[in-house]
Image 1 (cartoon, rainbow, N blue to C red):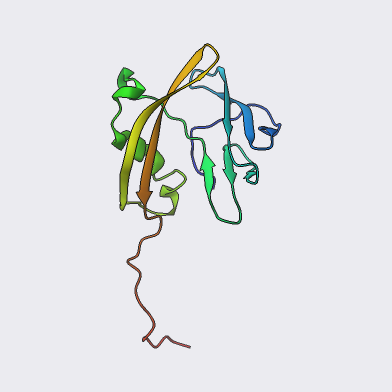
Image 2 (image 1 turned 60 degrees about the horizontal axis):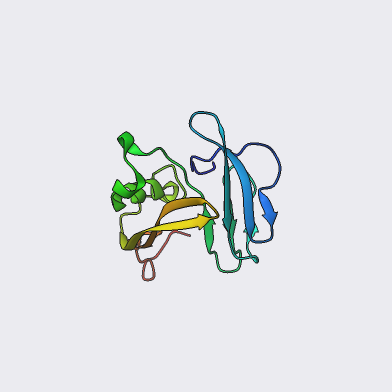
Length: 147
């Protein structure tokens, strides 16, 4: 089962614009098309399917796009860090599908404005630390198991 990311790609073509760059169209909540682009290390590969994922198969590093509605007319600048953590670690999402991620911490959070020509786009950059796999496993090193 694929993770729910809120992304609904339009069309069947590859989102790869050129090595290290994605250019794709996705469906907005109102059904309209929204163009989306981002850059990633050229050595990474684009995963197939409806989600927008890129990854380095040698190091297991990856990046992916998530989309969700803003709550109650709020602006990006007004959202607490916890909003983003809930989206990132939702039970049906990329990380939550493997089990609850309770051990997580925001290391830094800042608003960044990028401009491309006359268009300015504000986004949130969050650095976080989390444990994807729980460490509460039982130690079976001195246990006799049935044969």
